[in-house]
Amino acid sequence: MAKKKRDRVSTPGGFLALPKLLMESDDFRELSPSALKVLLVLGSQYNGRNNGNLAATHSMMDDWGGMAKATLAKALKELQERNLITKTRDNRRGREGARCALFALAWQTIDDCPGKELDVPPSIVPRRKLSQG
Picture (cartoon, helix red, strand yellow):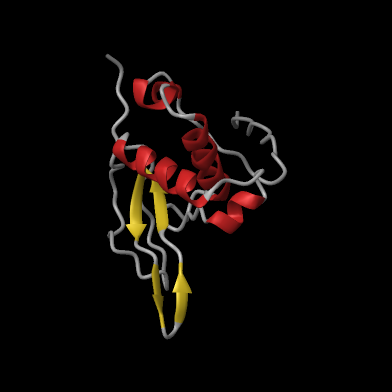
């Protein structure tokens, strides 16, 4: 007898999975409200194939209620220091125009992001390992 396939529940617009082991960590629980908001902005862009190509710019934060540039910079620094995100590309301004910094969620592997000129190579192991104990 063939096994029945489980019906997949579709979530319109996708979803962000936050592992409980991550959420139970001090690094996550002690986040400032601004850093948590920025983490959600980055996570909202993640589709399972674009980790490393996530951005949090001042203009993007307007859609999330706004955030001062200095507060955004401080929140991004906090997330990096707590090993919750990895910067994969620096921002630049040049003759070709400006390009924003890009980030990856540290508990996921970094994906190949063609055309994004990442400073960090794709990975097969997440930068942040989650374990109990």
